[in-house]
Image (cartoon, rainbow, N blue to C red):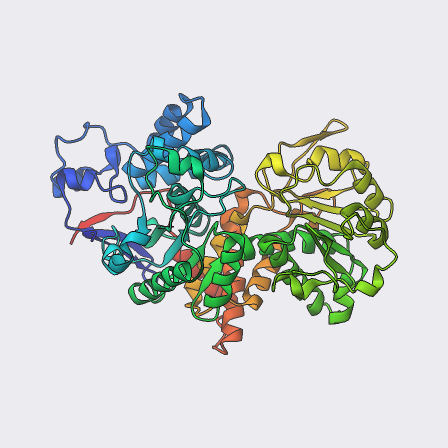
Length: 571
């Protein structure tokens, strides 16, 4: 266990550390180390005299030096490695650096470069971070949790590495995903890094390249399946709830079927969240809400196609259904305004072999009897667009180029400003590029993407492309749950998060602007989302509602700020 304690006294507005560490041990502790920023008094109190250069520097000076070092690397993966090594040395400096150069460094530490880092994990491995819970040590899971570095854990991100970032099964190497997600929680929601825990469940891998790699650091066996797999997950959740009964559990990059099953089982037992299903739904729905309300349109004038009916697609459908229901539309009316398309084509009441999640969003078969079908009897996207006349087209299919020029032009012929969102990751799997969509619609399309795209030049004007990035929502959702001490994360809380994000959309004030805010606003956005989520929980749990200003102040005071070093005192 760590020999330090983080004190955040909100009533007195005091933040500081207490520790028994001193000398080299203190310098080697990434959360406590200040490097050349240790004050003279701290150097005397903690036996650091002579162990550091005599100059006492500010964090600002340290950030600029670190940035110069960062810029010496020209390969993105090398920049990633530099930043992770800095994090292992001095976390406050790391976060201050990234926060200062957020637009430049987020793509390096998060999507898309983290995918390359995962694929090279076993070959570039240097310093372990997080916990590796394996199928072969299931009986000692409790002991392994006790071996964590930090004593007070409130935020856990866990993966089993089966469905990573569009690159599939990455086994134990996927630990970099929870690490990256928790970094975002700290940057955008001020979750103290000492209260976070990244975990990988190493249940094996079906990736032959990993199994054949002599340097692969995970268990070289095929993945657990069926009852054995879910028994392992059950044991994990039980141990987590015993060790950290108030922790928020965030599931990331599980296989589609397992992800839905896990969420469905534990959503009513503890405060838990699946980013691939719920996070994607919240941010995508917020973009749609902003696009509709920014144009002063109503939900009963919308028709929505979701192309790709896996976990992400059905998650988006669920939240958009709630939006339409809250607007006054009936279940029957919603069924005629929102459709899903998957591998068999349009999902209808006659489609066989549908999943339980898809079953809620089947288009009435009698309404499409005259539509053209393919050789297998399915109705393809082009025909659905021709007959259904959608105003919103969302892609979660990972089928590159699926939104063709003909399809987009057809859509634009029946709606003034089509809302088109190719959300598939990585970039090369996007259903269309923003430049294509704007060109094919005479610059009238309202576009948001899943992957980052460069700004588009339109008649000499540069148009930024908003990214439906889950990083805009999950930090605030987690923070709101922690502040409210929520026992569950409910659909109503997710809808509140989506509306809170939509309310920050630049498009609400300028029709030519984006439907989502930029990352530079993410910290303020997280506060708004946390406030909405916490208030939604108070209502649902029938708890006394806290004044919004008072609650917002509490949220802001709770957030860890990486822009200055916190004082350290002897325990």
